[in-house]
Length: 55
Image (cartoon, rainbow, N blue to C red; front, side, top):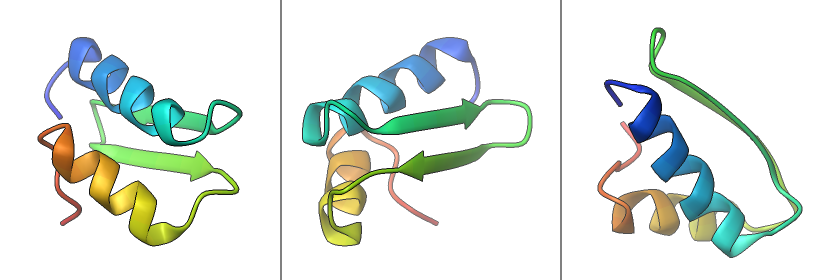
């Protein structure tokens, strides 16, 4: 994640899995914080599909 557009892409990908998810993506620190009812696997798959695999 390098910019605010990347953060927006990540947020949209995660909210596609859980529309009520609370997502905070910070391009400066490259950290993403998610509060969701979706499974960890679903979140990791959504991030990978968006081009941002979990490190």
